[in-house]
Image (cartoon, rainbow, N blue to C red):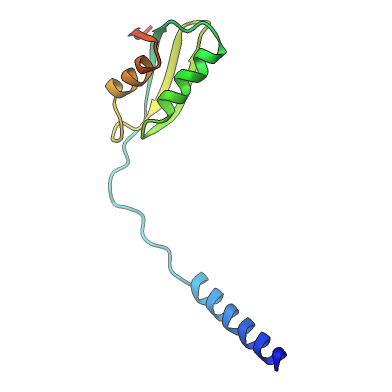
Length: 106
């Protein structure tokens, strides 16, 4: 009896797995994809690796951020982002919220 229940359960599981894997993929979204923008900021107040990590963490929390590279040696922060999800003002505010000053772009 236990064996027939086990076989029955196995057969149902395989049927469900086959049915789910046969689903057709959905068509990709027809919305245009925004191109990424790369911006480098001059940031005053970075003096160490911890400063770099703080800025990178703060900026990375924003939506649409694809890459953040802060460098205390040349006082720059390079950001690649999706302009449909965030903007330069939000990025600047995220850096300044961490206690650093954005003085422009080198």
